[in-house]
Image (cartoon, rainbow, N blue to C red):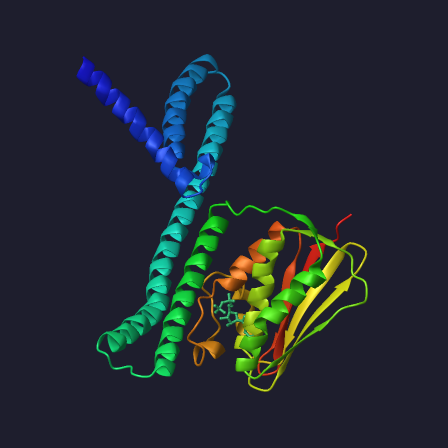
Length: 321
Ligand code: ADP
């Protein structure tokens, strides 16, 4: 008897666990195949029993029975549709997992190899001068930072996917924020031989935004503009305001985005063909995260681009009232 009860409890827990899996995959109850199958089963039994009784009662009016059967079939059809959607979402989650493993392993392999290679050189005593040592240690530091960036991006993507990215909006001076990012990016721009400038009206209203999160977006757009620009070019970051929003734009005269691929640009892991030939560093996660952040701060993000001529990314943030 006790064993039976245990089994029942386990079965019950097992079912709850099934729903929990759906929760983990971010599926609503009505997209959760195990829940819908359960509802379908109960519905089928109720339908069969009630059709039997109703058919007995209304033997003179078969159209009533037919209507009931049609209504039940429609409901079952709708539920089946939900099941398909649930499976679609599960398949997407699975695909994301595969992409995650592939991107993480590819992008981690290069910096990890660089670190191993440098440490081997140091270990074998093959680096004699302090200057060389400093160069190699900088290489290790850079590789390490690259890995930290990748892991942070992946964590942000996972937060977005799970709906767990939280925002703490407050009154923010967007001019100061942009200026800080531009100053910090100046060495990277200089190393790539591009100039970075800022343009804004004398007075600009404050915005309501989460400054830390929106900095990630601005940094990503500026980094991309630098990365995907040929040498000796210029990048301009502009700020302007209307009655409701401040618009920030980042304009480059770089490689541009091919027309045919523009619709995919905010999808996670997407990288356009034209940059894949030369730029191996990158994950295709930055713009996906940038869009989630802007939309989470009640703004919009979009771009204009022409292959070979350049790209401008725009986004808006609501004015603080
Ligand atoms: P990543 O830069 O790591 O590849 P992003 O999500 O930031 O990832 O960008 C996705 C893709 O969008 C890039 O790989 C590139 O193909 C394209 N892209 C983004 N910004 C620019 C830009 N300023 N100029 C040209 N292409 C860009």
